[in-house]
Length: 232
Image 1 (cartoon, rainbow, N blue to C red):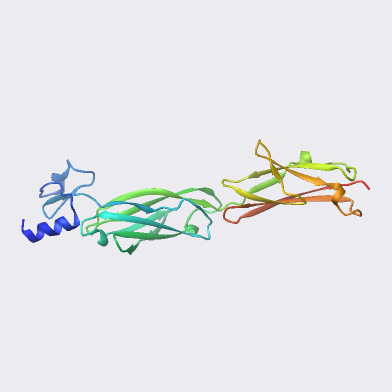
Image 2 (cartoon, helix red, strand yellow):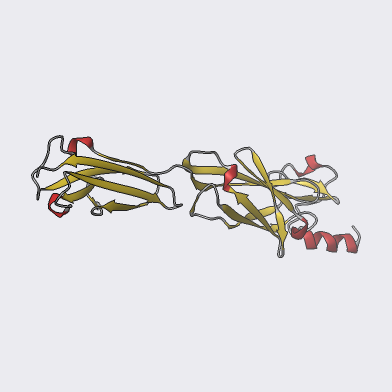
């Protein structure tokens, strides 16, 4: 092998696996090994450098980065594509053998609250691929919130009584609760209690109303309300 060829190989693929004349000669090496320039070589060596762990809404874009350590033709010549929910996002090359993927979460499934799998293919200049897999957290479902009807009085309550309404909230991630007239307090069983002091309402009012709103980490919200009669 000429000295110039040997230097080129050392620069782009520092782990040659022996001489060869065909891909079949490289069967004893790493998975996907192939023959190029008479030397057994491996597919691109790549790993995630930036993988967001936050929860995204459908209107947001996630940035994923992969670092290519080694590839035939050089790490800077590697290319890549990302597949999510049947859609393809092409990589943008960056310095230092990095590939950046700007992933619009609108490509994910609608109406879900889940981790959405993704698959990245990193290719060398000959088309040999290494596949990386992970997932992005997508929230496209508003919190489910309701006030337990069994805790809403069905008959007028004496003015001045404090009524405890039981509130239930369901969401895949943490939510913020806003309430009127008071903010619900969390109970040990995961439900919430909202205290409605009928003595604090307008003296001329004959009904009391409670409203609770749940807001999740991406800003989706839902509300529930209850009304009951108050005796004069």
